[in-house]
Every structure is written in structure tokens, then in C-alpha cells.
Image (tube, rainbow, N blue to C red; front, top):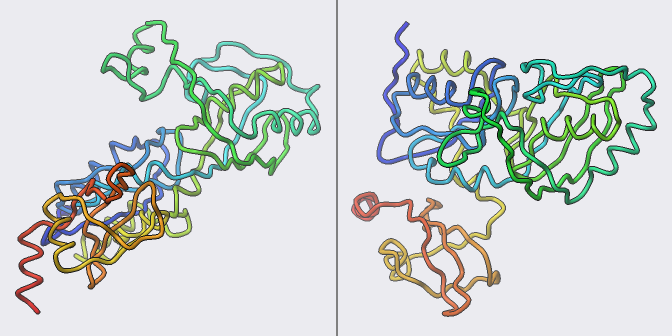
Length: 315
């Protein structure tokens, strides 16, 4: 079956919200999407481990330049934690390091420990992770037997709910900030309970505004690619920027933005970022407020001059 489609046209871009299958790396999914769509510029916003399933936001075309704004969004996970067994990867794919009897652990004890992991916490990432040390992923160093000690990082756990207690397993729903490792959370909960634990299964339910309910499978995307209508699944770039302020510009200000010049804006927000659109609703640029000048500086310009000229000629 031919997989390659025609790719995007006219410098367009958008997101595919995919339900990543278990056993695939995020890179595997990007490579498959590239083959199916024929689009060269493809990336993802936020890595999922091969063990995990759920929301993987894949960026195509110009949307690859917005990946950082998606990955910065909060996340929601459904995690299955297995008490009493510690592995070297802190998940079910690793080698067992130790075992303990979890039978004395009660539901009440779990609830009390979970409360200690709510709020801003220090968390040490797993040694087997994609974080880089001196330019090399930590998991490669760990697999070679190199001792890896990632520095702890500050993350926020907004809420943890205990959805199912079926010892020695439990199912949690975790609402958290970017950068949170659920494998680390499972490991740390096990340590706090005194019996150890590892992550047995993981589903990412949400990334920023994108939810699992709107995700499609790779199989569904492949069918659409074969029929030539895969772009119907593209989500507009503006969806990733809903948390930012928005401003509509035209005339000289639009021209200044396209040329990377600072501009004054009638905008109530006087800090952070905002998204600039033209009068047709097309995303032009991401702007950052410069408190020193009181002006807005283009950080990323997404409409190129030829596209602007074509739009002007069509009027």
C-alpha cells in the first residue's frame, strides 16, 4: 500500500492529535506521519515513552515552530502503579532490582502519601530518560552501565486522585505541569510507602487544550492518507495558542511585524506573549512584550512575505 500523500501546500501548518500506540517511540510516530502525509517538516510536542499510550501532538509544516508552546502546557495522565517491585527504569520494562511485600499497605496509607506529592515538589528524573547530559541521552549512558544522577527539578502536581485500589496495583489520575515524570512519581510513592513501586501502565489524557477524546489512531490516519483526505484531521495552529492573548493587526503594524520590528499595540496585557492575527484570522506571529520600551517584539513570524503578497493580490 502506498503511504505517501501530497504533503501540505502553500506553507500551511497544523497539528495532528494522535493516540500513540503502546510500543512506539514518539520518534517512530513522527517517522510514520512523515511517510503517510508526504510532509517533510514533522515533529512532536512532548515525548511519550514506548510503554505509554495516549495524546501525542504531532506538528506539521509551520506548526513545528509552535511545538514549544504546546509542550509547555499542563498534562493529565492515567497511571497504573504496581507496589512492591522496583525496577531500574522505574517502569514495567526494566530489570527488577528489589521486591517487598505490599500487603500491609492500606488505601488510607496511600491517600495520605499522595497528599504529600501534591503542590510544588522536587522530583528526580529517571536515569533511563531522554534528558541529555553532555549532549547524550541519559538512557544511552545508563544502558552502558554509566552511573547517571540527573539533577532534581521543580514540578507542580496540581491534583492526584486514587481511582482504583486493587492491591498490589492502583490507578491514579495525575494533573501536573510540564516536565513531570510519572515514572518518577510512581517510584517516589513506592519509596514513601516503604515497599517500592514502578509504573505499570500510562495513558496521557491531555496536553494543554488537546484531549484524548479528539485523538485519532495511526490506523485511522493511514486510511485517510490512502484516500487522500488526511488534512481533514489537522487542528489549526491557533488551538495551541488559546492560553495567550490575541490581537488583530493590519496596515503598517502588520508590515512592521512581518519585518521583525517592535510595534505598539492596544492590548490590555502588558506582559508575556500574545498571538497576532490578520483581519482574515490567519496567524501572523508570536509577540513578546518588552517592558523597557513598552512595545511588542515579534518572537516568531509565521506568515512569510510571498504569502502576504498573494493574499493582497487576491483582494
